[in-house]
Length: 282
Image (tube, rainbow, N blue to C red):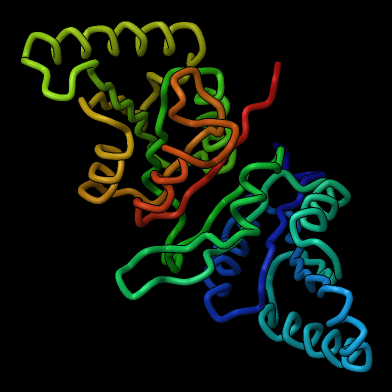
């Protein structure tokens, strides 16, 4: 993931909430000394709406162009502004490939009154389909990422997700977090201890075979009993955590190719930003 040829892509809906993703994308571009591609996609309307609004399309495009320039302002990184019309997910992926981007940055749709974060259909589809890592920005960035929690099931997907996070954010402290369940809903102490020993054996093999750098300063291993969607958000909320890292394919179903199920709940339930890395076949 060198900085000589690669860029990062910010997909923005031009909303005020998108400023958080913009600020984070600018910060990452500065750190990596790479180009930032800022993309806004005007979603195509159904045929009837297009026919009725044909006269307004040029005005809408000019308005979007002005808004795109306004939100960027006088940036201090190399930048390209792109305005396209079409299917947002398809345009985002095509633009990222064409500009040799290695990371897509985007924001959330909105917060509900009870604090729930909605990713929006575009972000959810991107997470399912994109071969590039997706960084979902929830919080306003006040500093570079310093504390990363990588949810792991010790699979190849988890290895790739952790390594991607290391490459993008090499200065951050990383915690590898593994949740180990038991077969029974109400296990006794012996059953919990047996499950922990099994998790420790998996961790030892994973580190020895795949993660030669896992023992370096700044990397921790945490094992906790319970289901991932129960214990991972609790750990993130009670410890310094700027970023949650999840892979989208795993041996145990923790991090699946479809973002749904456990991985989706992890992203919804944790308050910090999230990096989603899809497993690439070796």
